Image (cartoon, rainbow, N blue to C red; front, side, top):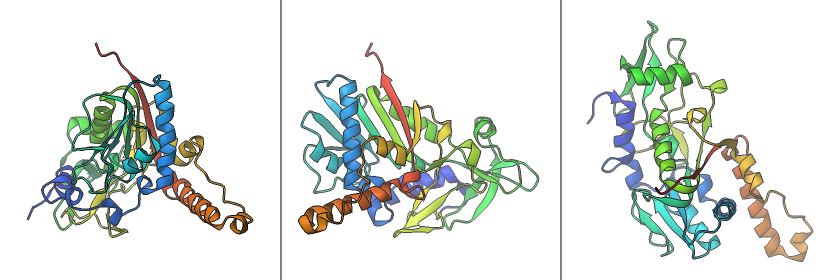
Amino acid sequence: MHGFERWRAAMERALYGPGGFYRREKPSHHFATSAQTPVFAEAVARLAEAVDEMLGHPPVFDVVDVGAGNGELIGHLAAHLDERARLAAVELRPRPADLPGRIEWRPEPPESVTGLVIACELLDNVPCEVAVMDPAGRVRYEEVDESGRTRPGDPVEDEDAKWLAQWWPLRVPGERAEIGRPREAAWKALSDRVLAGTVVAIDYGHTMERRPEAGTMTGFRDGRSVRPVPDGTCDITAHVAVDALECDRLVRQREALAELGLPVERPHIAEAYRDPTAYALGLARSSASARLTDPTGLGAHWWMIARRHRSRG
């Protein structure tokens, strides 16, 4: 049993420590993500092709899926991208038995990437501290125990206080904020591995204009939102302060997928009589697209896009 500790340490242990949630569980058993949808992979494949063309079709083109879950996205991409694409999945869980053999399964991203790095719902699982303003108006770290009980802890340290002042100021006792510095570090670490190409992070998030007063820390288990209890039995996630990340473009998923030609039109009912199979497939694709672009659901995700082109010297 663990006593009270800061949220960052509690999340790290509960999600990624020995026997932690992401070392043991399949994410698809607990929550739905865009990466689990085949039609999403079609759009990402078009993005990869655009990046490949931008780079002049290098001899080897890397596609790296960071936080690959059970390998759904990278597995679908293998069917869309030719053999010149070197595919890698980054995940702590064991390699799925049904994954195509051409996909490398590894615990860390490659040191150097020429191509596309995509991280779908990764940053919101990067462990972070939670700050809370106490009744006296002092900003403190929030601590949590293994049952999910919380209490104010030590005053926030200088670097975290500076981040809060710039990106998420707390003004009223009881307000809470997730401190985004570890997410920014994870994003920078991913971007720094891209020698030439594009890195994309896709997450639920918020901007300065609409920071949630109570924070966003929550848990997921068996398809339902639950209290975030750091005992390893549930996912623990917090939305990302997306405007604090350095990127070339910040865009909602529904807009990004529309630009990539995601099929959203329902097939005409007449098709059901001419070719019932094609109609059923088209209807399934348009329904999946609707879920991916729903502004109250997955379509509200933010895409953070950065382009890199650095000299090897």
